[in-house]
Length: 260
Image (cartoon, rainbow, N blue to C red; front, side):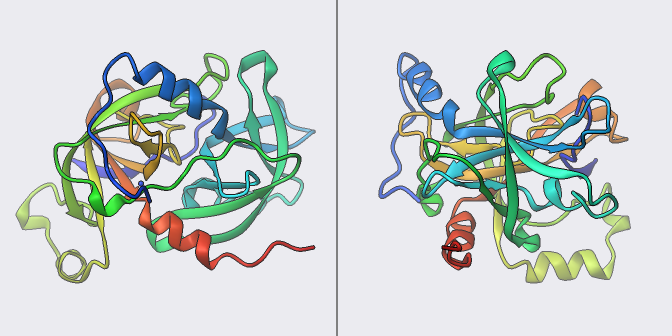
């Protein structure tokens, strides 16, 4: 089994207290409340068919014009083709609207990126205290797991925190461990959430949040894959990883001040 970041494809967690999982009757209200804050990350190239290419998920924080996603989602945008523009998709399906976006700062080590979007502020999600997350907590995440293949619709999944584990790509067998892997396990600078949940291409950058408060506790960034990358769709492992929300707050605190 290998680890694979949920790379873009064409079909392509700080609250003051952590609360118990919400009752089933509260969950629909939470999802409805946070959906306007969850956006698609896309590129636009007018000479391309289709011109809009979905590449991942993001969510609005702070002043309503700041979006968090994964660094790997936006890493290649405009690198080979400067006519390719970055943007975010808001709304749903036929009511979807695209806004231009700019990468303000990134944290490649923790696979996070902070974007600045144009237009009027959107509803923002609050960052919770990911230090209070424990194994066994039940959380949820919302994003666009298959991009725009079935239309631009938010999709929500339940996620049990199965483990809080060091960042390291597991080896298929102990015999394949090498010096680099062992050093990573010994010296890894931070822990991530291992989730008993299924994420798909397009889920990268989805907020992992408390089902009652809607406060963000993490960011979905990769899955364990059985075999090849193509197996993500046909044979999902049911193991997903998320970057704790404390690092989102750190990235927000370090960002340059907005231009006047």
